[in-house]
Length: 252
Picture (cartoon, rainbow, N blue to C red):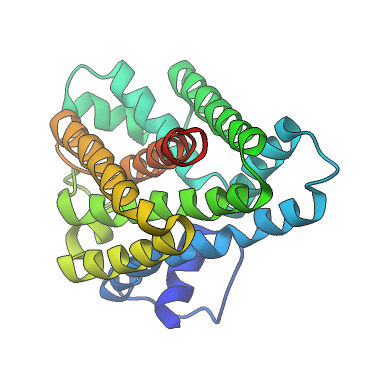
């Protein structure tokens, strides 16, 4: 329970449990519970859907779902995506990219990336809302944040820390082992099986292969992972997971 609380408090703005001093090892071990946190976060938009489903248009409902997730996470990963895109678009080499990513101000390319990513999430949820019944919509709402948080564990396990100086992502990149990844994969797999049944055997490898694609890309571009890269991977996997759900399990 303590590790889940640590993971929850790190990923959301809603406090859970008592505050105490946390060691790097405890924080890295808590990462195995990231998929469970993604599942728990989805309870809030799911309740909204259960109450308001008959009264809202799919587009407005989808927008509110995305806004609920942004509020719960305080935009943590969106900020990482914007900083990462600013660095990649403005830096000529790894050193420049990392330096730009350190800047807390959002540049024009980062703002554009945020606009399109949020728009894609809303559009994909809208399509799922239109093409599926309420049960399948709820399955999608519970599943895509789980996949995003699972990808964070894969990234931490497979990528070294990219900076020489300390940073938010250092603990995860240096401490996470295959044990945490296997446990997180077990959690993600069970959740996927209960939502997609045997389609999970296709869905999970698709998500993992997509994660590997981004992991290899960031390894080549910045030499590893940072806190911002973690945020970018989470957001990219969330939106691609929604795309897979729509393409293969709703429309297909």
